[in-house]
Length: 292
Ligand SMILES: C[S@@+](CC[C@H](N)C(=O)[O-])C[C@H]1O[C@@H](n2cnc3c(N)ncnc32)[C@H](O)[C@@H]1O
Image 1: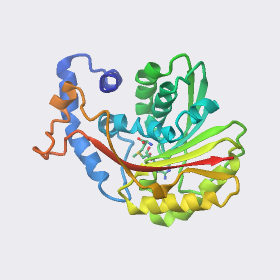
Image 2: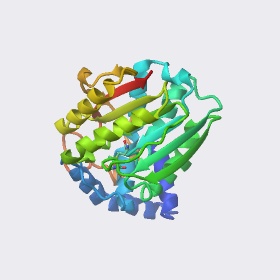
Image 3: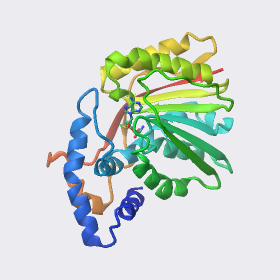
Image 4: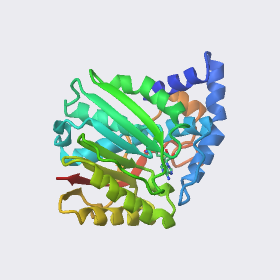
């Protein structure tokens, strides 16, 4: 994963020799630090329109977040994998680790056979995130898609502005991952109402999955409100309840490749606190609601 991301970044920035590549990573150190500082404050406010910030996100957060949807869907064991759901609605998905999570989940259950998967991406900055999405769809997705075809469309949309959700014919998987911590509390009711509209729009057999970092009380409160509102529908089946609590998961990507350790994430765990220690654990929670 890390080498594929680097190859995509080298390509996008025309970095053809090792000296340029080393300099590029060393110059990203300040961006990694400022990105991490932004994530320590609620609500997170960050300018994802900057390509160096996106590169920092790809190398420090993205790999870890490719596992979250896989972990969440495994709550159902192979059930969702066998239900042939190929329409993904991904909100606040930025560089789109969710598509990787879904493909990993399908592959784990040998259920990725000649599908045509459509990923519709809705994000406040989807146009800007195209820089990273291209890297992900050109360098990571091909390794996982097997014989399936993955189509994507992206649209700029704010989840904290009231929107209209048109009825959707195809059974869908709706995912909100790591974006609720960027919503201010005064907009929470609008977000809850938008979830109700999405629930009404999706057909029977669809799922709504919300995954978010468990360290912000405000985010847990919002997820609880969404869960309470959606579960007032007779058709709603709660498959994973927010009251089951958060998980503290050791990431499979805790050890970046040596080139990244030497030039970007140079911090040594428990020793040099320079803001450049590779992430090791992900604390998150999730809910899964099925429309039956
Ligand atoms: C921390 S990133 C998470 C990206 C991806 N879901 C992941 O797990 O890596 C937060 C994402 O939410 C998007 N976002 C922030 N506020 C938003 C809003 N009001 N409406 C829609 N998307 C928003 C950002 O552009 C960004 O892509």
